[in-house]
Amino acid sequence: MTLDAQAPPPTDGRSTFPAIAEYAFLSDCETNALVAPSGAVEWMCVPRPDSPSVFTSLLDRGAGHFRVGPHGVRVPVARRYIPGTLILETTWQTSTGWLVVRDAMVMGPWHNLHERSQTHRRTPTDHDAEHVLLRTVKCVSGKVDLEVVCSPMSDYARYEPDWEYIDEGYSSVTARTGDANPDLRLSSSLRFGLEGRRAQARTRMEEGDTHFVALAWSPLPAPTSFDEAAEKMWRTEQFWRDWITQGFFPDHPWRIYLQRSALTLKGLTYAPSGALLAAATTSLPETPGGERNWDYRYAWIRDSTFALWGLYTLGLDREANDFFAFIQDACQDNKQLQIMYGVDGEEELKETELTHLTGYEGAQPVRVGNAAYDQSQHDVWGAVLDSVYLHTRNREQLPEALWPVLKRQVEEAAKHWHLPDRGIWEVRGQPQHFTSSKLMCWVALDRGARLARLYDEPDFAEQWQKLADEIHADICSKGVDERGVFTQRYGDDSLDASLLLVPLLRFLPPDDERVRATVRAIAEELTEDGLVLRYRTDDTDDGMDGEEGTFTICSFWLVSALCEIGEIDEARTLCERLLSFGSSLNLYAEELDPRTGRHLGNFPQAFTHLALINAVMHVIRAEDDPGDHRAFRTPSRA
Ligand SMILES: OC[C@H]1O[C@H](O[C@H]2O[C@H](CO)[C@@H](O)[C@H](O)[C@H]2O)[C@H](O)[C@@H](O)[C@@H]1O
Image 1: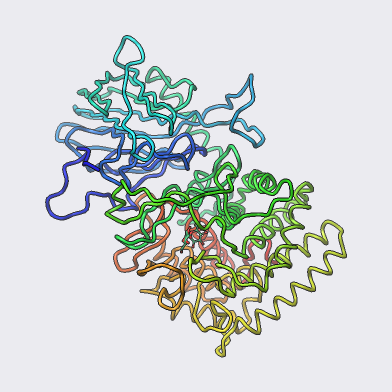
Image 2 (image 1 turned 120 degrees about the vertical axis):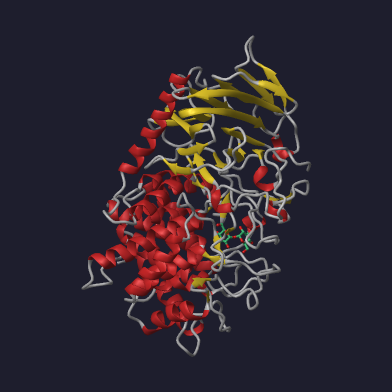
């Protein structure tokens, strides 16, 4: 694809792509966007987060962007989120003045007042996405030349939209985007010129001047004046602050990391259905220039239920209701639970390659869809059962309509636990007897039996408990090597970081020698510069070539597991190090290169943020109660 002149290419061999961790994440809990430090939105998919993208510079420098910033300056002096929100504030200094830009995806009041929503399946709340990306600008000192360039390319940059003016003036324009995306409407206090595939505006701002630019993709009204824009920005700020205020955050220097992770997880929800996305992007490479590039814009049962665990730990439990309703929808008419779905419950996520895109720094292929959707992964039933048990026990309230669905999941685990599968890491090699898959089947039977007791079904409770004990014994005899370390798969001594879940899911108590041996072996033998790999790619047939970075969820799991076995100082040191690797906005991708600190893989990733919450809370609670380092129990794991 030809380079769109969004920035002159560097002449010194540097990448033209921002580092993955430099992107800011915006969301309205319906769709999301990534903003580069230059002020360019380089990734946005509308109307859904898994729709074709309309700005795709993230994956190809010539594939569309939307920039608001000063003319001639590409690097801001500061970027931050307005505290407690997903509103980005970028401060610019030029040779003549200072400019502050705020970016948000607008949240407004519930708007389906006279007719019901076509998209929302969950119980209406007081708020709803307004389908507007809003950018407000203020010159705070001197004079600054402001530049706006909106250059969308719809359908993953396969289609160049036509721009046209909406009325007699210059301030409202529409991009006709073809069939794959809704038309885009741009309204502003500025005057647009239409130049080929771009709508652009330029003006000289003086101290105290304000402007706004709003990009809308639905018939909902966008602001028509700066005052209206400021009011929408304020409402959005209130929405996020009200949400975060429902949580419990310890008075601790690490509070900001917890809040940012919670906000990121909330931003990865898809409110209309209750789904949670694994990440906002597709195909950000796990290996620089490599082929381990996947589409994460879907709802994995595993990632989602773990995310609910993270939110729950902070007292944020309302998202669970919507997700359980999503699962109930997915299983209606006795359908089998899949390991993942589209955000509106789509069952088929056919994987294809977008060969017209260069890929991030040349990493190909760029994939959309995910062929893992029809894999058998035997952790799925335990993930759901554990999540429901966690919420049920502590609310003392049983989700009755869900009980028949849950019973079926326990039965599935009972039927399949002894068979090989693709495992928690979704390997594309041959199915194996993965120990962590069997561990999660034990979780399904164990939590199923506990729930059956709560539902007063003693026969099921007894039958499931018996099988849980059998699986437990099987794992302890075949999934442990002669050193007493839990191994990746039966009959093989390879290590796997998913076995850090053994203490976290209460399979064995933390003072069991096998737990200590496993945690120590992973800490010492499955790390690169102290950060944890999922597994060694040379002893695991995952169907791919090349190496991968350290998997950050696993590094945070190690922090939690070290706390469990009483190694609090080591846990704190590792946690501090991991927190220092966060982006300047405290966001995380899937993986880290421990030598360079470079983030790799999709971004921002729910897995990493949910594990950060659990790790940080483990350390904080262990510090609060030094006499009993094992005082912390995740709520369901007593
Ligand atoms: O390792 C190959 C697999 O990588 C992806 O899976 C990973 O991401 C999922 C979503 O966060 C997560 O649930 C899983 O545990 C991870 O291994 C990819 O989605 C797969 O298609 C691919 O086979």
